[in-house]
Length: 444
Image 1 (spheres, rainbow, N blue to C red):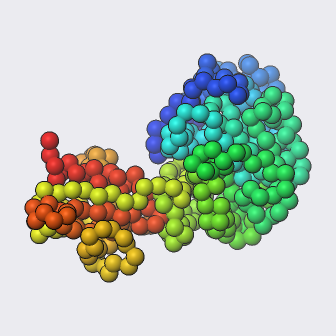
Image 2 (cartoon, helix red, strand yellow):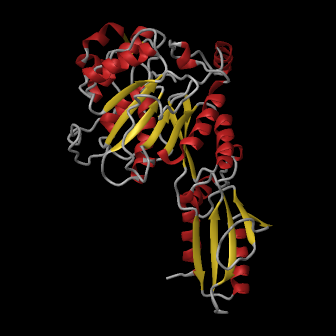
């Protein structure tokens, strides 16, 4: 998670929406201020507004300066300066704790803003930050960028919780951010812990709109050194942190697998579970696990900052899982049309026995698997520009659902197509396919 020496840019898998600017009555109104990092950061200009950074500037030319990113003190002061200048946040970053790279953390917040926050109607929301650290960076950035959100940050380290609380207090955000010491190291979601600041259940029965997590990535220092040696070039950042911020038994795969297990138990108490993922193979394994765990929606995104690539994984136990489409065709005509149409979309279909599916009218079911979102405009634009299909097979199918074609009532000249989402896939993808089929079947 290195801070690039080049001008900071923040490409996302989806264009981030601007900070939410809905008026609020229960917290300071941030709507008049656009908190963000510029696409290009002039370290010299930042130092002009934050004197403590000046001793660490290294001149590259008459007009350009940088800092030594291998110097932990320089990196710490730079991040304090960026938070002060661009987010009006004053924080203490202890030398023995993880120093968060601001651009990387902000990218995660922006992904939430673009992909999760729009799921909710205007009004107060509360997010849960798992492993908030001494910096309390996600709740602090979230308080600035997501103006409708409050936060609860948890951590298992007593010193980190104490410093995080101080950072909240000195920014007068104690009404927006609560910090909680999780004394059970085997629990990542301590919603039932004594004195846990649990919000009222007001979001479709949920206590939290979302949770977020930046897990320890490594199993041991040996794994960390091995992965570092595999990278091209020398590391640009000398990372210093507490052991529990970097290492966990079994690495990130084990940590996040436990988070998935706990999410099944908490279920709808949190509407959206989200986490950062550092390894692509971990992402694929977690998506497979979620499909078996009964998640109604699963989505992911890519965050790129300099030479660092991370993924975001989100899942929910809410979601519409069935769509039905009326057809003016006879049953035979509709079955023929549907089979030919999904074949054109490169969607594989295998007959399966109806096991517990309660669609009125019965009918045989097809298990349908799409490796590509061929029904979307985005996919068609990619194929047109690149000339090849762009599926990432390592991440598995894009969509899996069951389909049934049945007669509609007593009429011989009407039928119905039912699409039923398989667990662990995204309902918005099935809705997109449904809308595409509807337009093909019933052109205006």
